[in-house]
Image (cartoon, rainbow, N blue to C red; front, top):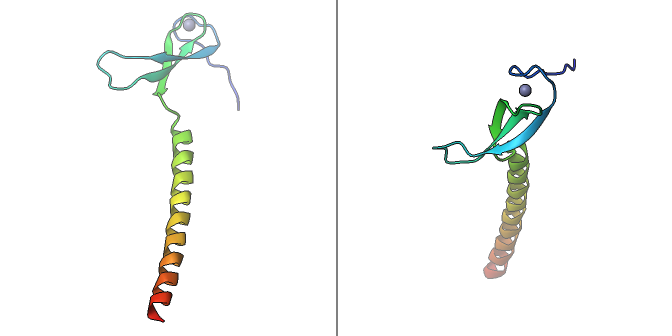
Amino acid sequence: MFSTAKCGHCGKTGTKVQEISPVGAAYKQMAVCCQSCSAILGVTGYYDSGTLLKQAERERAELSQKVQRLEQQLISISHRLQR
Ligand SMILES: [Zn+2]
């Protein structure tokens, strides 16, 4: 069920995403803010973790294929040496 969130500060609706650099924090973060008064409604990580996860999955699959090719080459070399 979809509902519209209201800002707890000004009571208006509408959000925007804004990059913030909190003092003392090692990383930038993305804040979901009220479009009207810029009150921070929530904070999320600077990078989209879903995108990073998909990227890591893709890299893992590529590495796995490379390892399989190396295994096949090793088997092939081993067979040639035994002749
Ligand atoms: Zn507001």
